[in-house]
Amino acid sequence: MARWVLSAVVALSAVVGLAGTAVAVPPPADPGDAAIDAGRREADAKAARVGELTGALTEAEARLQGLADDVAFKMELANKARVDLEAARAEADRARGRAHAAQLEAEAAGRAVDDARHRLDEFAAASFRQGSTIGSLSAYLGASSPADLMARAQLLEAVGDSSLDALDDVERTRAEKANKDAAARGALAVADEKRAAADRAGREADEAQAAAVRAQQEQAAAARAIQEDRTRVEGELDRALAAVEDLEGQRARYEQWLADKRREEEAAQQAALLAAQQAAARPPAPAPPAAGPVGDRVEAVIARAMRQLGVRYSWGGGNYDGPTVGIRDWGVGDSYGDYYTVGFDCSGLMMYAFAGVGVYLPHYSGYQYNAGRKVPLSQARRGDMLFWGPGGGTHVALYLGDGMMIEAPYSGSQVRVAPVRYGGIMPYATRLL
Picture 1: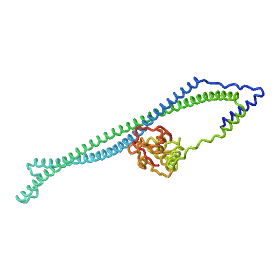
Picture 2 (picture 1 turned 180 degrees about the vertical axis):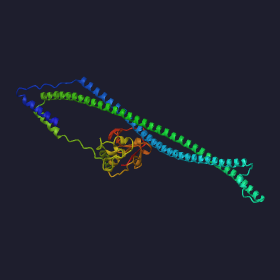
Picture 3 (picture 1 turned 135 degrees about the vertical axis):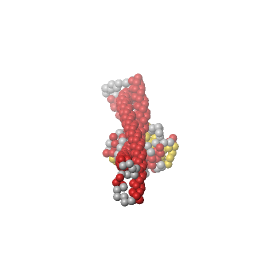
Picture 4 (picture 1 turned 90 degrees about the vertical axis):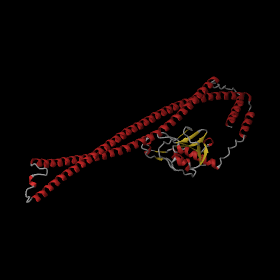
């Protein structure tokens, strides 16, 4: 209505000025159709480039998420390898102790055999020197009769046999100790082999983890480069749109000047006043119908989430009342300082959004996936939750409609609106409202 009133005033002024000397208003510059069309083509090209970069960024971030999962898996394998290495080292130490003890026992048994053999050799030498096989002459001293002498000879013979039996026993003991020593040394060799294998596995696991971290870092750098490129092109798009808007504004001012000039030449005071009255009497456009109760709750959830745009990601962060300090994950999240920074993770953002309408979700996306009614992904509507990974346990986002979603994506990022990523997405959405 303001434009009609302004036109009426201009027309009235022109009619009044007819009585005197009219002063011509110079026309504004007309940029021409060619300049406007060229500006629109440039803006369209920039918009298409932004779309391409948005798709590339979505793919890069999906790849980054996959690499983050791979890093987590490699970290667990490295932890397992370290546990296995500690167990193998402990077993090797125990085997080394057993082998050392067996060696000492075998050496002691060998010395016992040598001592027994030495005593037996001395007994045999004494018997040989005295021309007897039953011991030294001292065995006969004190014999009072032939019968007594025979008894002493039998005693010495028994002593000799006993020495030989004792030597056999010592020899058997030495053989047993030697076998035990050999078995202990064999067990030690096996334990050392297992320790060496565990050590190699640990190094390989650490190398695999380091390679996964490097791949993730490289992908993160690639994603940042795409993001920077997109930001630059978005700036160029904004400038191109501003230029088109400026050209179209010039054209609008020129066309307005032409319209005003025609009205100044054709209109009269009564026609201008009548036009103003008609414009003022036009009824206002009817207001759109109010959303139903469910629609109101869905919009309340979305609005609550949208107010968190730009809040940083923090693993384990967020609750029913808002962003919180994250927790340690001993990996990527810690490298970004999530455990001492206030923010949201993906399921924490869903907790906060739905708490605004009295729906209280657990802080785990796998449980959130089963918190409501499942609907096929093709039937998802505004306010449904989308999930990724087995059982929905990898990631969750809030669907906004038209292929867009709001999410807290990963460490180092912020709560944002992004196109839906269909790689790895669950075939069902969860509807709570």
